[in-house]
Image (tube, rainbow over all chains, first blue to last red; front, side, top):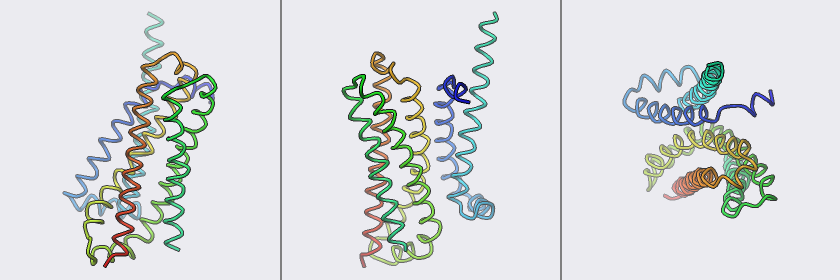
Length: 81
Length: 152
């Protein structure tokens, strides 16, 4: 686990942070324009703000891990070539 | 109870989060070998403060603010305190923990390399300044919101 974190690709963190920022901005504006979205978040998570937070955290970590795996795979392929 | 939670939120955000990142920022301006361990620790302290402030502030916002404070502000002399400042604060705050985590990851990953890699240090410094500015904006918004809830 410690070795995995040490070799974690930081580019995946940059990209997932940027995507998460855009996603939060999108959810905020979309929620203001479409009350159904905020209502759905409230029904699911108890409060629209909690819903946006949970979605943002999930997207950030899942995207960071997926991008890291893709970048690792690409690196291995480059070395094998 | 609400005052206690707000006070705790401010104390954690300002003292733990604020000092953690401010310390890192100051060290980054003139980084020495002996400062590497400190910036690693203090960036982690700052990140912990941000997460705790997020949880405590979020609990207050979801549990008390909407039902007790928001109606008072909207009926008072400064409804803009909620309509602009709280609406902005609640969404901008969602962005800070991700930047704080990125800052910690960069600090720990680069570590000693920050002494030689001036470009990496500059970018880390810019990121830390950005976190501080957002944090201060959150603090200032909080003061406006608290003031508006007491002004009639």
